Image (cartoon, rainbow, N blue to C red):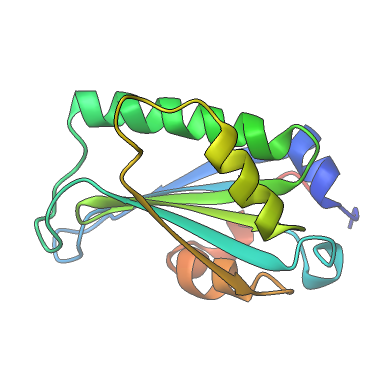
Length: 159
């Protein structure tokens, strides 16, 4: 098995997609970067930074309308440019669910992420986002919360 680093994941990683597949479950769409790095490969980026953009009421089951989708795409492009150009942070997964979208980054310096977020271009109104940071040196939140709905054999595609 090849060993990956965060920088190598940014250069050579791919994206996989998972979605809700039965009518009894709530809608979700999960895009995640593969391969999913092993705990020993992620020591350089021990802090989880979750960014949430609520675009509809909770429990509404809403998906983003085209205008909101476009705004979120612009935001994602800008924040990835700000964070990933020097591997300060890596976007590991994006979850769209129940009126919200959450971007899951792992970073080596959450304070610098805050500075870059504040410095990046904005629209007329501030982005309607909430941020939460927590130490997660083995990226267990990614595996346990985000990827628990995905067949683990898909986690390491590309290795």
